[in-house]
Amino acid sequence: MKDLMGMMKAAQEMKGRMEEFQTQLAELTVEGRSGGGMVTVTLSGKGEMRGLKIDPSLFKEDDVSVLEDLILAAHNDAKAKAETEMNAKMQEMTAGLPLPPGMKFPF
Image (cartoon, rainbow, N blue to C red):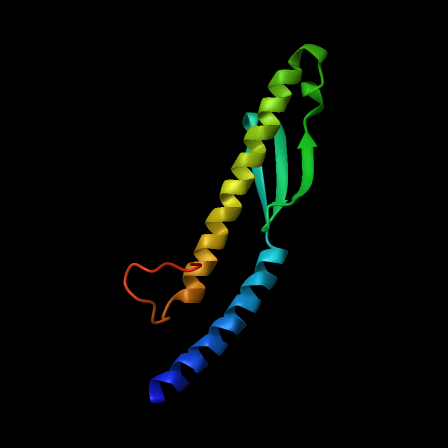
């Protein structure tokens, strides 16, 4: 019975940590850049695009495909940074939880 109480306490702590994590995630913003900073994409921690900045020198009719590639690269850079931040925060949050060996969180 003692173990059950311990598990329930751990579950409550985890719930609180998850709520805190969701709040931090909503507030997180990351920037991805490409083309030497000529294109910058800003994403929320949830992957929603919040901003896009394009250097005016890229607005040439014959360079549309280059601009499209730079936007994609900047977006992917920002997304990778957001995932890295989320994973780091998740590791902090689950440190000390009695998870079985090999089990990762989130499941």
